[in-house]
Length: 115
Image (cartoon, rainbow, N blue to C red):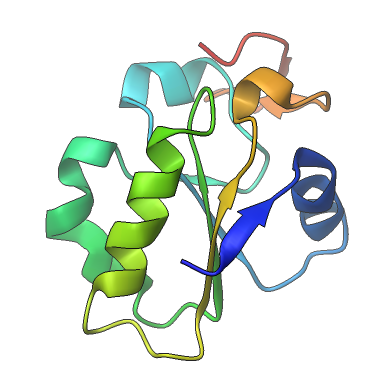
C-alpha cells in the first residue's frame, strides 16, 4: 500500500476523470444505497477471489465506512502478485463517514446516506 488519500483528494480524482479505480469494499446492499460516483463494488469478503480484476489498474483507491478496513483491502491488493509494482494503491482516509460530497445510488440518483 502506498498511502492514505484524503476524501477531498479522491473527490478531485473523480471530478478530473483521472484514471483511477475506486473500489468500495462494503456489502452490495450498502453500496447500492449510496457510493462515490464511478466507484465499483468489490465486497471485502470477495476481494481475494476478485483482486485479479484490478490487474490492469494504474491507480486503485479502496473505500469503506470508516477508513479502517480499506487499509487492509489496499494492503491485500498491493500484495497480490498480479498487480504491477508501479500500480499506486491507496486507502481513503476517514472513509465514507468523512465524505462530504454527493453520492450516487444504484438508480443513479444522488444520496446522502452511505450506509
